[in-house]
Image (cartoon, rainbow over all chains, first blue to last red; front, side, top):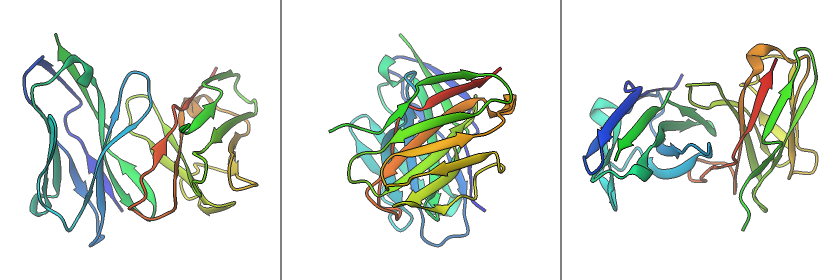
Length: 112
Length: 115
């Protein structure tokens, strides 16, 4: 069985602060993919990143960066210089047998 | 191009009634997925189609739930004898094909409320 845990239910930070969202996963697969999605108030899930289990290099995309550590089964997401538009619910997910398994999400609020 | 669309955006029904939720995938996408998202939770897998056939329906909670995709494009999720516990947002996603490299694109969801 696959499981994704996002222990942080809600986080609030002041605009321009950095914030890290934690994700821990469990899987028996040797090859797997991890994802982060953003769900703004409109409700639509927006794809942010996909990571192959073989590639442990950290990735940076603008203000977003991801730290994948296989040894600790973690795939953490950092937003630097946060902005009000970053306010949303963020989901970490794992794919196996075509099905995405999502965590319970972290609600991020950026305070202006 | 158009993304995944779902209709209706909101559906309010009474306990015991039958409802149908529709999903229009991105044109050319062969794989289609249904997920259910309860309040404060992440989406949970229900069923996925590859073409016209249901490749995996292991997430359907019981036999009141059924989904079809007769022509390999539009899909309808059908719920019989609705219960209050069925209230949730039902999300549809599509992808070019199956396999982990194929990103699933999500629609805006249908919010179902069973009174």
